[in-house]
Amino acid sequence: MSQENNEIRFLDGPRSRWSEFKMAIEVFAEFIKGFRNLHFIGPCVTVFGSARFKEDNKHYQKARELSGEIAKLGFTVMTGGGPGIMEAANRGAKEVGGKSVGINIVLPHEQYANPYLDKWIDLKYFFVRKTLLIKYSYAFVICPGGFGTLDEFFESMTLIQTGKIKEFPIVVFGTEFHQSVMDHVELMISEKTISPKDKDLFLITDDVQEAVEHIRKHTIKPFGLKYKPNPVFGEQKWL
Image 1 (cartoon, helix red, strand yellow):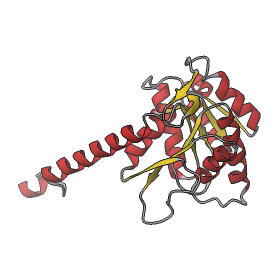
Image 2 (spheres, helix red, strand yellow; image 1 turned 180 degrees about the vertical axis):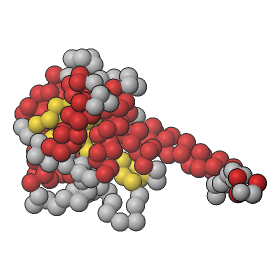
Image 3 (cartoon, helix red, strand yellow; image 1 turned 60 degrees about the horizontal axis):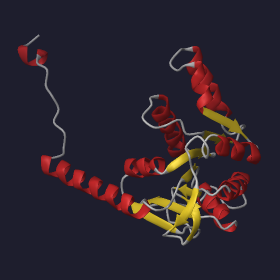
Image 4 (cartoon, helix red, strand yellow; image 1 turned 180 degrees about the horizontal axis):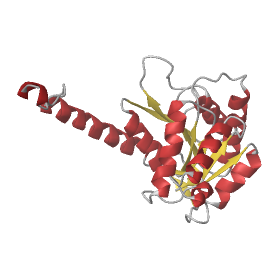
């Protein structure tokens, strides 16, 4: 075999240093945009779920009901700002007089800001959006969804598991839909890739009141939340 055939050759990526620098500036600008617009929204509960469900879908209806009850606790309901479950959650909050916020991702299809938002921002980068959805929330609700919803679920779990954020409650809403995910969690436990106690990081339920009580129990007193006048909304809200 010739020396040429034995030689290891390395691939070169397509991006220049200037392109990387411009991307870094764009990312920084998106974070600043998020911080400026979301600073006064108060403690949130973020609801994740599919953008593809219509309002006659049972998952849409349940997310709408659950989010209304969460808003009654005094939390701002935060979503990805788009249609489907996100719209249902924002709609449920608005219907009971709660506050509704969205962080919308700009996509060539599917995504548009739903009409039930008091405040929203449009972002280009998914990872900036995910960071902001987590940053302002004291609890996370995982409704039926696709790849993005599972990504958000497991990222939230990973951040809590590794101590990167506090042990905020996670509610997996929809037992039948998520059964295969729960089976995989059990597989990971049996293979010792996660610990049995990691199952305690989330509640899986179909019951709205159980979900709301779980959120209330593990947020308001544990994190010292209280009501104060909110200068943005001009009324009593969590700060």
